[in-house]
Structure formats: structure tokens, C-alpha cells
Image (cartoon, rainbow, N blue to C red; front, side, top):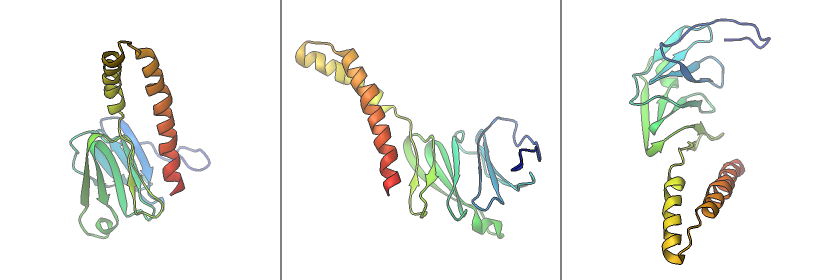
Length: 171
């Protein structure tokens, strides 16, 4: 943990496995870490506040919502949202789970807190691409794997990623 001036404040190893994700709450009074399947809450001084029960899969990303009441965790096949605020005042930690049939690689809350977003692994375009090549060969007799791969992989995926990033920014 480093200060604003770049000085080492504290060094600690939160878990036996490598830390995959870190995020501070908006107020800066809670640090969340994801190491393997365990998400842990810490004070900025490095004191453990709470460790959540291990998830079924490793956590890929963490994000607090704007007021710092919820912590989103990207997992393989779901997003887990832990309610933080009420539990720190003596209540219990509640978790909501949003299932998804793919690996969730990122997680983020909208600025107004009304939406939860996640970036999933893009397996579908690659599996459909080979089917498109086969269909084109069956229909026309020409196997255009190079052309379809260039259009499908290079252009369409990049255009989709650009539009996918621009659209939420406009909301």
C-alpha cells in the first residue's frame, strides 16, 4: 500500500494465492481484495474487516457502487453483489447473485447506481465463424475462410467492441 507521495505505507500478503483484483470504496475507508476464490475487506491500515465465503470460482474483478454500499464481484458464470453498508453497522452481509452462462471478466456500476454491467468472454463469435465458413462453402462451393475470418474477427469484433464501449458512455 503506497501513499499519495509514493512512499510504501504497508506491505502484507492477504492470502496464500495471488491477488487478482483490488478496489477502494468511494470514501477510501475500505479496501476490497480478491485472491483466488476469496474476497476480503480491509481497512487502509491493513486490518481485516471481513472475508466472504469462498466462491465456486476465482474472482476476476471487483467494483464498488458510487455510495459504497455494494461490492460487485465478477466470477465465472455469475456476478455476486455483496451488500457492505448495513453489515458494517452490525448487520449481516447479504449477497445477491446474477447468473450468466459465460465467464464474467469485468464488473462495474453505473454512476447513478441503477445499472450493473459486466464484460463477458466472447466465445460465441469464434464458434459461429467456423459454421459460417462451412455454410458459405456448401452454398457457393467457395471456401472463403480467410476473408470471413478477417471480416468477422478483425472488423466486426473491433467495431462491436467500440460501439459497446461508446453506447454505455452516452447513457
